Amino acid sequence: MARIRLVLFLLSLFALALAEPVQYCRFGHRDGAVDFCMGLTTAQNTSTSAHDMYLHLTVSRSSALGWTALGTGPTMASALMFIVYGDPSMASSTNPTLSIRTADGHHQPQPLNASTPTGGAALHILHAKWQPVASAPTRRHDDDDDPPAPAPGAPATHVADILVACYACGRWPGSPLSPTSSSQPWIWAWNDHQRLSSYAPDAHLTMHAHHASSGGYGTFYVDMARSLSTDPAQTIPTLQAGVAKLGTSDRPIGAWGLLASLKEKPLVKAHALFMSAAFMVLFPLGVVLMRVPAAGKGASPFRRHWVVQVVALALTWAGVAVGVAMTHGRMPRTVHQWVGLGIAVALGLQAVLGWRHHMVFLRIRRRTWVSVAHVWLGRSALVFGWANVVTGMVLSGHGRLDLGVVGVVAVVEAVSVAGCVWWVQRKRRAVEGGEGEVEAHALMPRDEGGRDYFALEMSDDEVDLDSDADEVDDGKLGRELGNGGFAPKASVDGDVVKK
Image 1 (tube, helix red, strand yellow):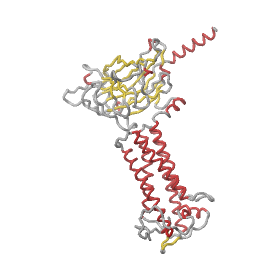
Image 2: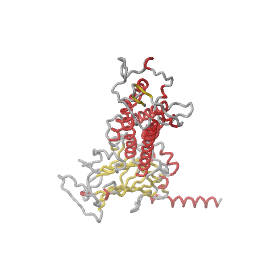
Image 3: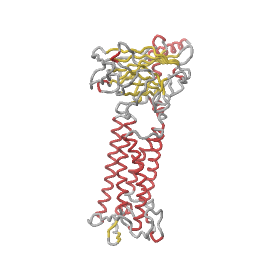
Image 4: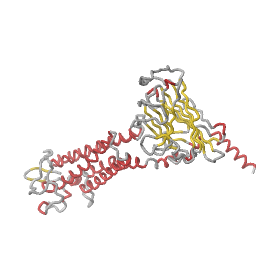
């Protein structure tokens, strides 16, 4: 029994030694980027049995422009937000403003008030002061003038020093905040250009930058369990100078943190999955399958091509629908959104052109302007799709490594697809006896007989005598070349033709 007590005593000492403030900092002021440090500790309240959280936040400033914000959870919706702004040049007479807010989505956060449900959580601002930076010159401006913007590379003149207590913070009814989580998501955001007309807690705030990678916003993860303190005298966190991360990370912490992160931002993940599968896998695969000979009695290359492309098109439109849901139906605001909508429309047109190309080719055995439009519109949509996957990753805050990997994959795919097309065309020229590709571009298909150009079906007279018309395409040529044979030249009115 004595040994068990000794072990428990040693474990409690070990846990107490591990309990320390966690810390996350971004030192970007000299580079014109966000600059803040946050440290926090948690402690279990003996009276309520709930966990209290103590947040120490510093924000480096040299201008009254903009604001800096931290929030609990993976998204803005229902997050508990701590937003700092103010004029450091008036530090002798005013304090920085800490506005505690929440939001119902990706909208301007609103300050907490008496009617805001808190679930029993109580927030108190313990300290909010400007601290001058000793080595920085103090700059002032007249009240009637606009506040001066900091010069590039200029040091911060003041630091907003904030201390907040959130009693029973784990009871916050919005975005989950677990005091015992080993990988609790937090968000940050920053605006460096807004000229606020007021520094009141309910001041109107304009949006942060759209691009996460350019410093507009981001996510980080905190080991809340590490910050749990059992000593009431050690609840106020002390920031360690020059330390960027202590019990925090820009990525989920541990295996459980990674699994939990998969549930975060489900719409964003679904949008990324649909679009990546379509443009990084299926569309390139469909192009290649059109030119790969069928094995045995398998599906013809043409059939494989259209089936894969239809699936890719369905995923693209599903991705667009999810994207619209993410923005709540608002008009597009970014290049990524406009390009994505343009690609979705272009792919719908490209599918119609592909269907029409096949129907016409079965009758006249040669390409038309519809064929060429289908091919080049598809190639253009694929290239823009690759680029838009990368811009989407930029918007969602992926780092340079992720962007580099996807960029390399896109380049490899582009070279591979282009090489496949070139190889098939080269073999075709060889089969045609060096005559090169002879391609007749008709403005309209022959022998329309007064039928509607975009008819949905062919008459019996228009059906080719070949019982398997789907075989007449690049895939058939590829199969004949692959078997070492020679593809015969089909002829319509003396023209050498191909699909």
